[in-house]
Length: 151
Image (tube, one colour):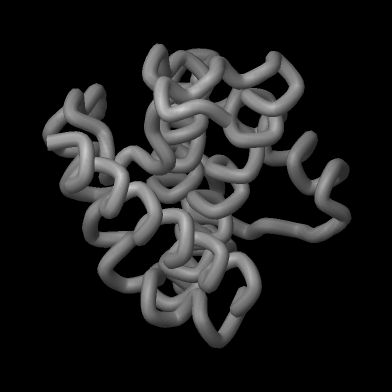
């Protein structure tokens, strides 16, 4: 790649989005398991068709990944919101993770919720998903260096 950084192919961009979404999903699952385990048996509240869409999306992810994710309604909502933000991100080609983005597209309350999840799950990822966590740390360091050198 040249210094001006070539555009990502559609396939590479899709893989990048999927990888970012998987990291966020794993972190939310860790957070939910550690903080909301009592809510697992509670029935999901209905909010129009939104909760149904989230359930269907979660079921598809369970089928794709082969693992079952039991998220409380609040964490399922946060996961769906984070995935939607990632899917519609216009800066995906230039950034590594949302934390490195100059524009924060999250609503303030969702931004606070995702930060809480990240603070809790970040250190625990090293024990639960070490390869994913180390890859994330390396990519974050590279991005910070790139940003510093471009100033």
